[in-house]
Amino acid sequence: MWGEHMHHGYYPQNGPKKNNQEAQIDMIEEVLSWAGVTEASKMVDVGCGIGGSSRHIARKFGCSAKGITLSPVQAARANALAEQQGLADRVSFQVADALQQPFPDASFDLIWSMESGEHMPDKERFVGELARVCAPGGRIIIVTWCHRNLEEGETELKPNEKSLLDLICKAYYLPKWCSLNDYRRIFEAEGLQDINTADWSEEVAPFWGAVIRSAFSTDGFTGLFKAGWSTIKGALVMPLMARGFSIGLVKFNLITARKA
Image 1: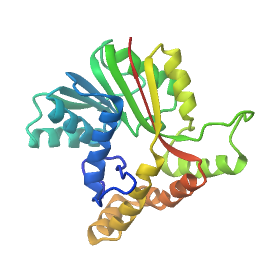
Image 2: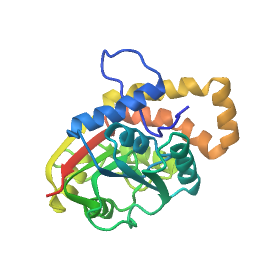
Image 3: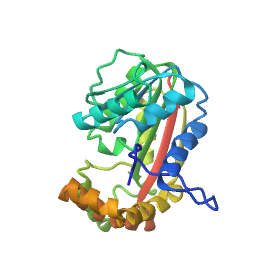
């Protein structure tokens, strides 16, 4: 159902019809274009899943790529795919903690985090590590789920909003959410420059329906059955994400900056 890319797809308004995998590739391309990235020599994919973004970007720019994930199964699958696709000489994946990365300072000129920030329990440390391993002049890109920005005079989300997020967090094993404004403050505290943000919630919303429809295929039913209850539970929570989107609570946000 998700293919090599364990992230949502990009569906511009009034755009052509596309399948899940095409939309996921488009997401990578559109994010790079939005962030103004036209080249890279060394990149790191933080929260790499099975390495779809790393391999795509390595092919696109001819760069080397490292990927880190907490899952030994994901890392093994990512390395196997890199070998199959002829990229093992410059693309590799390993088990590592995004909050304590095993790389020297200033190791990469492109820092990529696609839908992994929401899994980080300490957002300040997360961004701090991204900034630490980024080389001067390098670009940091985070694409992540956030809750809405608080309005002037608000100190917290409304009780019904917090209750909905709690249900989503329980199903997806997520820590506490933050807002895009929270990320901006953290980026500013790290001294990052040329900070830019975006809300692409509308552009990803069609993906939920596409994935749910694919789950009702023979392969979808078989895969969910083999994966077990924890995966099925995650699939069943997709309507809660859609509900959060419909009330303006759940946001698909981007933030990018350059390291001085």
